[in-house]
Length: 165
Image (cartoon, rainbow, N blue to C red; front, side, top):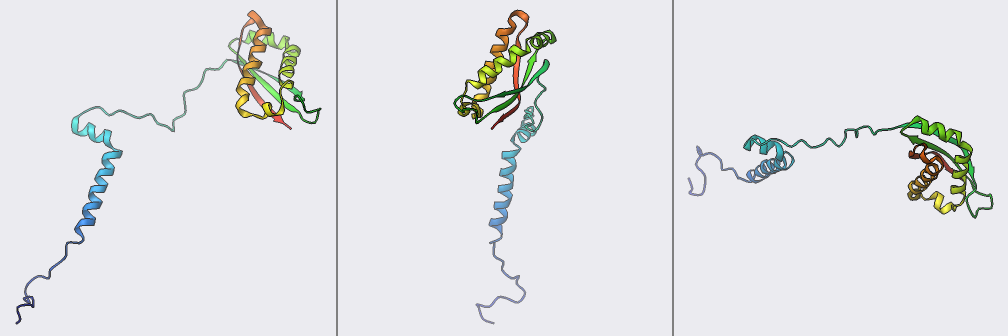
């Protein structure tokens, strides 16, 4: 037998090339677990309480709402359109007290006129800008509250229909 040939009873030599990928997988998995489960690991190792994160899929707590009424059938021609464009809107009104809404209902013609006066003074550019809707609702609420005086404030105003053509 030659000196270069392996002995027939000796085990064949295996390479250790498999060791590096296996170690990388094990260490990578442990690192990922440590990052994603760090609070639970810290609690189990140190005995510290786990801070529970808020569930982002949980619905928000219900908002407090008052009494509602709606003013509908409001159609205006925006400023500078010569009657070629129109805005059809329904205005939802919320108040804490039903008596406030009863008083607003008694003033319904004046309330609708206030909405028409406000919205018809605006251009199509302003009425079509979604970012301006909150300021328009705030102005409608202010006008209603001026009309009502001490009969109670309107807390919120909603545009329940808003069609600009």
